[in-house]
Length: 325
Image (tube, rainbow, N blue to C red; front, side):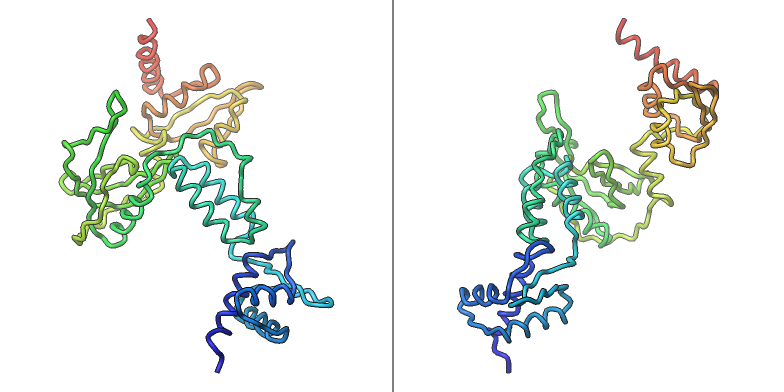
């Protein structure tokens, strides 16, 4: 019967290979023996070969280079280095995650590769230029919301705004909200909790970073209310696609061609007018957000029809100009 210490040797060798080796770094049989000896686990070469074979049988992708003595390194891992870099970049760029939590998460990600490649994940070349949130409880809020949604439980929290002095002012004089969470949306690097309001048979939206003392209320509900097209709903809610749906003809300078494609997708029909201009006709939700999107392009974009939308744009511009009279 194999001794418990021999089982520990197998785990120590596995951890050693994952920590110290990659495609550019290998360790020898003797190095493994020396490492185990430092742990008071004396071993012979033959037993090392046996443990390596067991780890391969278990599924660890170990490459053996045979020379005067064997060298070993782990090849394929659950995450490739490029994938880990993407995760690190996403965390560093996210305003949603506090700076201390970013550091903590990145340190955990580093354990998913060798210590040599982990150094390449110290992405000091990235300058995000983005302010991090100071609310360290947001990720815990998200976890609680997920639990409530999956378990079909209600959710309790306090909700606040900032006053002119940037002080927290709780709504409802600090009383708790009790809601039915339906799903979470992510937009412009912010989390939103979409809840269902039974009395009004409608959805109410809350910013997760403005929720405090969030907890699951273990009261089961049977409400199953979700928009038929959640992605479209979120577009209507957060982007320029909210308001009255209308088919709009818009004219753009050719300099904005890529902007238009990014906004409306590759399927948008481009109608060239001349060497400078092109037009598109798209069904959009006419709203202040949509009109503001058009205004940002100044004299390089124009609404052509319908006339009522042109008039709405004129009124919007007139209201804006009054601030500068």
